[in-house]
Length: 164
Ligand code: SF4
Image (cartoon, rainbow, N blue to C red):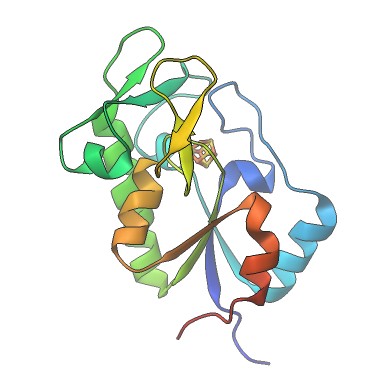
């Protein structure tokens, strides 16, 4: 049987209780089953891998998006005002290392997260508003040619042929 292509997946989408609030956000079982049938799933949680505890204070990107954080032009700040940019960047680098090590060209990451969001992130004002932009890990992966999908884009992911 052919080897299944690797796919980085946000651990919370697999049901692991790693979110800031101590919970997971598992996708419906049939979708998880289909993913596991097609891919070798590589679970990541950049915020945990960057050294942050669970549960942890909610954090948002202030002054830009994930790419700006990587370039030092914006920061990730918790609701209590702590700068956690370093941990977010460390976690993103570990996710990229894992992708490179496994030859992974695609990722399925949690929408709207300051780490994992691939299209939108919160405003940085903790006002529930979203704005265009990627989280820190999504931006780093995208910058290295890895296609990042979110859990609402499963159809697109499953239609996309894994790149060699
Ligand atoms: S960093 Fe990513 S994987 Fe970890 S809890 Fe947040 S969205 Fe889920």
